[in-house]
Image (cartoon, rainbow, N blue to C red; front, side, top):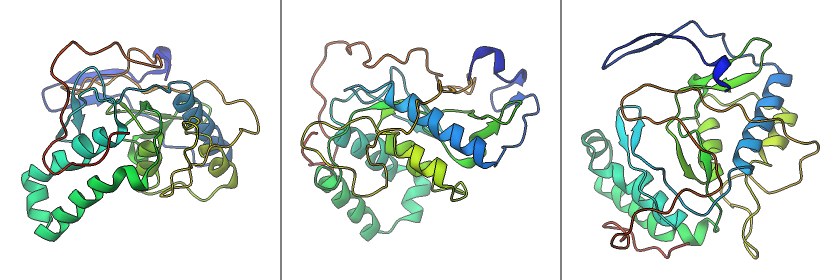
Length: 245
């Protein structure tokens, strides 16, 4: 979202961010088609090799760990799955069998998900974070930014009340994932295959800045982040034994 279109901040406290009233999301086919192309453009134009972000943030009330990692499988296993198993709410919700199943999935990630580039992710792309600008163009608010697989955004978008089935938006979001390395295949767990867009994508509508403590809005969309400061090599966390990739 360009700065001139960002919502006005009316008040900020340690627990509250009050914005001006935002337009309800326009669910027209034209708006969904344009948003699909905007999202695809944002993903495809920011492809890189490092996963993470230059600082940690929050996803809802949970701390989001964004330590730079060269392997997408290791990043997703450690910082998007295993990291939450120690949260009290998760410990109450999951049985021992559930936890073991998640750990086994983490071990098998390189087998079930092909190697893919990292892209700039909104990170909290559910229906409640989609609003419309004047004219109906759908845009996003309240990001939990990191660089990871494009499918992470798409799966969240389709996991909370999903957009209506519209042929145009479906075909456009399939262009969201940048080309995979030679020899790899489309992700078997979703419909994000790499095809050619029927028309050039429009300029991406980037997230509005958020002042929630710990959240950083994107300041750069360069393909690769600055190299992390020298230090000991990252080691997979407990329970993660998958191959890097």
